Length: 221
Image 1 (cartoon, rainbow, N blue to C red):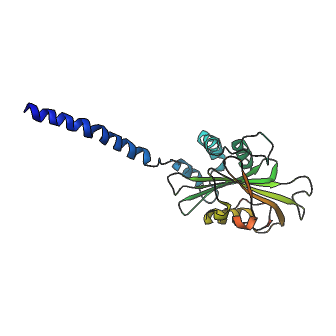
Image 2: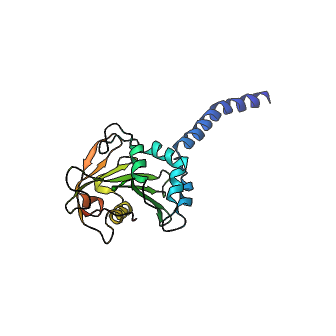
Image 3: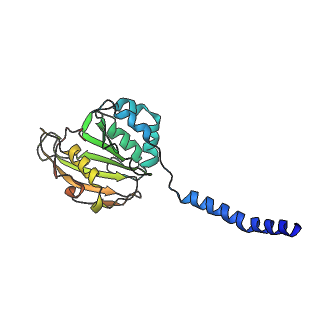
């Protein structure tokens, strides 16, 4: 009996830590689900949602700060991207959903609604893809209501995104957001996708699903 006890002890010493390590390893390998389900409440009532209430939710401010950290230069050097996004979403806009998976939050800079913002979120994966898009009017020439006024389009994903493989649903959303009906045509002179380290990839607007001729009064999704 004493010999059996010793054998059992040896077995536990050999298999116990290994089993524990395997369990810990499996837990670490499993992707952590990021819970952003609280955002859905602000899409009701459709189609405009509760934009003001969303902006007042401290979790939304934290979301921008946590996910939008890339350096930016299109709206002043040294300003955190999360603050830029908050400014571009602060004015008139809405909160919309599609296919029980995608969210789009639109807005503009208060008193400068030619400068427009879009926050697009794909909640269909454990780690949601979050992309901030900004339509920037280049003030140095035409006013935004004049024909030929130049604009730039900037995309800031929360992870590096190949400009040649932008998700189709994001392209569709960008196209609808940038090209509403019944508006004066304007031009996108520059389109770019920015990596998390600030590396900028200039790309044709149509590669992002957006025509080079746009309008300035959109909040559509």
